[in-house]
Structures are given as C-alpha cells and as structure tokens.
Amino acid sequence: MLTSPAGKGHTPEVSHEDFGAILAVVRDFVRSAVLPREREIADTDAIPRELREQAAAMGLFGYAIPAEWGGLGLDLTQDVELAMELGYTSLALRSMFGTNNGIAGQVLVNFGTAEQKGEWLERIASGEVVASFALTEPGAGSNPAGLRTTARRDGDGWILDGQKRFITNAPVADLFIVFARTRPADASGTGIAVFLVPAGTPGVGVGARDRKMGQEGAWTADVTFSGVRVAASALVGGDEDTGYAAAMTSLARGRVHIAALAVGTAQRALDESVAYAASATQGGTPIGEFQLVQAMLADQHTGVMAGRALVRETALRYVTGEDTRKGPSAAKLFCTEMAGKVADLAVQIHGGTGYMRDVPVERIYRDVRLLRLYEGTSEIQRLIVGGTLVRDARRQHGKDRQ
Image (cartoon, rainbow, N blue to C red; front, side, top):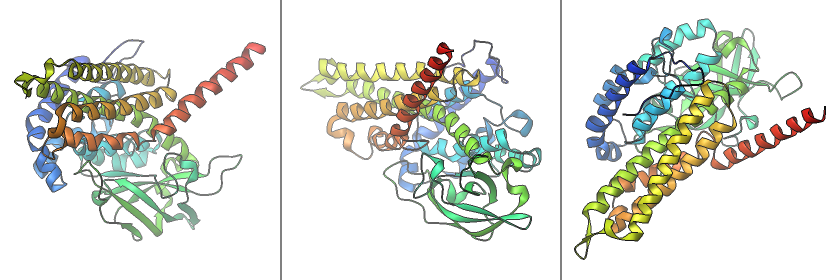
C-alpha cells in the first residue's frame, strides 16, 4: 500500500494510520467498483449515479477541505497518494470532485472570508455543491494576466461581463469561482479579482457540453456572464486584487495533483502492458520474451518510478513551503509528458489490439493527452521553471556582490 511521506518537520492533520485506512478504501473502490464500469462511463459519457453517491459518502468531494469545514483534511502529501489511486481508472471519476477539492475549493480555503467559508465550504465538501473554476477564456488560458472578463462596481455590488471556456463541471456546477479584471494592472496591484457566482444568477449562461478527444464523462463547457450582478459579499477575500494570487496558488497546488494523477494513469498503462506481454503470443512465444518488448516495458517502468518519486518529493517540499513554484511546474511537466510516452508504448506493445476501442490502453492514450494542457501547458511549465531558475540565480548573484 502507498503511504504518505513524512519528514522535515511535517505533521499532517490526518494521522499516518488514519490515512492508510482512507487510502485502502479508495483503492478498493477504484479497483472493484469503478474499473468494471469504465466502458460504460466512456459509452454513456457520464459517471453512473451510484458511483457518484458512493464517492460522496466516502468524503471524496471534500478530501482536501479542512476538517473544520466538513472535509477529510488531507494535505498535499496525502492528496498525491490518493490521486495516484484515482488515476488508475477513468479520469472522469476524479474530475467529478476534483474542482471541489482543488482549484476551485482551494480558492475559498486560502482566500475566502470567514463568512464565505461558512456559506459554501461544508456544502462543497459534502458534494451538495459542485464548484467550478472559471479562469480560462478564449484569449487567456495558462496566464491569467490576459483576462478580458470584466467586473465593474455598481452601487454596493458588481457587474460581470465576459466568456469562459473549457470550464470543468460547468454543466452541473452550482457555484462558479469567476476571475475578472476590475481595472488594468497598475502599481497598486494586478486588477484581477475573483467572485463567487451561483449558477442560477441571472445572466449566467452555460453552453453545450464540449465534445472532446477523450476523458468521456468529464464534462466541460463555455460559460458566459452577461450583465451578471453580484453583491459586494461575492468578492473573495473582500479584495479586488486577490484574484491573481488565488489563481496562481490554486494552480500551483493543482499541478502537483495532476502530476500524481498522471503517475497513476501511467501505472495502469504499465500494468496493462505487462499483463498483455505475458499472455499474448506471437508464433507460439509470449511477446514478453522478445527483447524489444522488454525494453519498452523497462522504459515504462522507469518513467513511472521516477514520476512517483518526483511527485512525493514535490508535495512534501510544497507543504513545508520550501518550493511552491518551480517544483510543482517541474513535476507536472515531467509526469504528464511521461504518462504520454508510457501510454504510447502501451498501445505499441498491444499492437493492433491496442488501437481497438474496447481495450483500456486505447482510452488511456486519448485521456492522458489532456494532462499536458490543463493547469498550464507543458510550454508554460518550462517557462516557469526556467524563468524561476534564472531569477533565483540573479538574485543570488546580487546578494553575493553586496
């Protein structure tokens, strides 16, 4: 069984023993309840209602929400262990409650006022409320500085106008965490705010579900805001410059989570490859006896091992505050690229069989492609890592000269 790492003075809220029990239950749920229904999820483009109910009963809609707000209170070192288990099956399962725990929920956890937390977090943790993170726009994706959605003061409230794109869980969302520009960036701040907008607010429109390459059952859609009026209390943190920091903080944490998810998916692709290589024959000989097939299996295994170690180290350094920027980007970059390579090799090992729709590696091949795009593309991660290294070196050089 995977367990949460410890060390460097880090003591998680949930004990090692309690987390081990949580992880075992989730692992059993994934392997015994979800795996047998993967084909159904893909064919119907939906998570079965009973699986959603089981997930909610297990606390999965709030596993990363603090216990004081009704969640399980797992920290990031534990989150990644859970993510590696959830990545072993259809990624749509994790997507169903991922925004509640991650990029949307963490905005409230880290930046919300006491009143905002009291109004929303318990319902988010229980699954009563599905929260969506509305940041991406047609002209602004990985970098929120390009936002065009606007928020202008109107009496004691705000009016929001704009369009968001590829918003996860938008068709079923109860609450949108909406990022909008209140003014151009200036010396006093970024001018990016974040608002809590209930889905039923007049002027909120949700488009048709996107038709995607993969990840069937994980619903995304465009969301429009046309003269949407919200009260002053909807401004997260009561500060109109909170949005940029909230987005960057949530995305950085989310990148470590996605890296772990990629490791779990790569492990599944490896397991499917090993099982196929050991049983499928060519000329009466199991193909796993062929050295070139063994070489592909070795490359897959090495990638998974490296990714798992990197994710665990990155999560620990994040929660201790040692590295909350370049580490998450490096982990997401390596692990999502690695998962793509492992999935590609899995199809290759399966040969023509791997191209057939009813074979798990075919689905995995399509599903993992998105991991290199959301929460910041691989190119953005390279810019973050490289830019941070250079800036750190220049700062150190300046100190050395003093």
